[in-house]
Length: 404
Image (cartoon, rainbow, N blue to C red; front, side, top):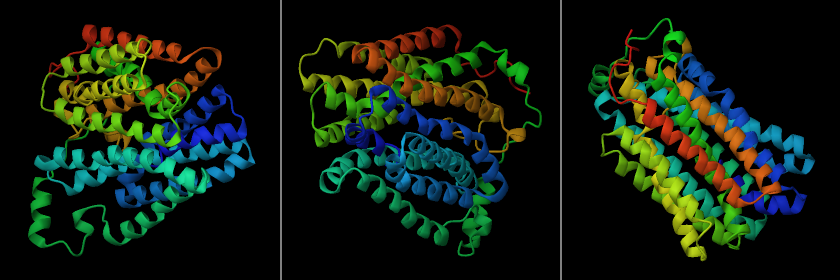
């Protein structure tokens, strides 16, 4: 909710402060500056002091940054950019901390289901944030979105402090038989003490992951941050309509991500995850009705979600011995003891976050000097590059020489 509210609020904010598209793109990308900084740090802290404290700190930090957003905007653009980057710092520790907690609390056989349940909260949060933001803006003004959503973090934090524990060993109310069951079935992977960077970076499938992650996230983050603006400027939907219509692609993504999980071939899934969005984005310049444009956008994001069963799952395919149980998680333990899959995910996710930094900012620059067709052409081009790289160099084979 806190991440997507800016994509709605940016419309009245840019009108009030007379921001041009390039400035809007800079503001949208500033979140990723901080988000990039704490990917590995969040895992280090969780491994050192426990996931409970790190996740609690992250939520409080980004909730304060969210609540301070209106104040920063009134002070000036530099203050707003800093506050948005600070919000990214807080959110950057969340997924590593969550993974750290789940790895201690959930038996291996149940981990995939628990992760799917936990991460479905991101889809639900996006839907909720996009649905409620227009209502709050109309009733109380755009600052209310940041004040209300930010305050929810303090409510969550109060419950979290009293109810959560980093591991079963710390929970005094856990029954002995339940604690024994969890501990017996939570198998720790043997860590890799020395990371063979040269070996890892010499493998074409590794570079295929890195390049594909960048190409994929460029389009994904543009859709995440800029679609309400597209609906408003191009399709002429008002603020409420833009927010509600943005819900549809997220629901489609939730369905497609789970559907793709039933199909084992990651190479085919990622090809769909690239060519599907590319095809539907190219159709936007040919449709002549808002309904068809919305349908194309929903189909674009729906097919994009097949990447959950494509490049994200491929980390586990090529380094199964060092699997950390879920491939769509950020780096979650201290770098010197990262399993090989965690290293691969850290490398490719860094490229993915950089796509968010450059993609959202570049979109604003393109819109100031060009059109939405140009924005979509860049995304389509990167999707096609990703398709070629993925199919030429990626592999679903279990051993590519990374087994140490």
